[in-house]
Length: 182
Image (cartoon, rainbow, N blue to C red):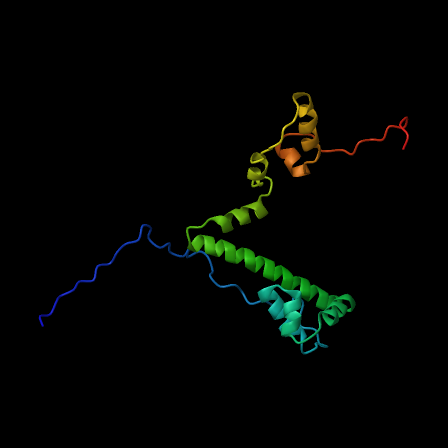
């Protein structure tokens, strides 16, 4: 049987892979639950609870991981301000790590959704969900003489952010008329 020579051809995808940004660290720093030094009377379940909470975010799951009941954790949070501060630090670390992962994923891929989330957080006034306002579609039959009343009721039930975006005055609660019976 004759030998057939084959060649390997490298096919280029439509987009070259994006190189990681060298200015970014691609690893999160290690979580430290004790910002002001490790307290001396420390129960053996506290650190595993805090590390799991910082990594995964779930209060119930972290309690299960540390083999402690969530009510016990709640009671220690109420009675020990140092532990309560460490729990809040773990929750903040988890929220920040989620945000970091979204931004990191956006920078490594061609999907900018993580960057939009970050912009909404950093600059909420400039990055409102305008699409929610612009895509209002009403499918109802209203008599011509009731249109103004209907549109007025829509505007009356808007959020302060939507009112600001539409250039409307802030909504004030109607003042009761003293002559009308209650």
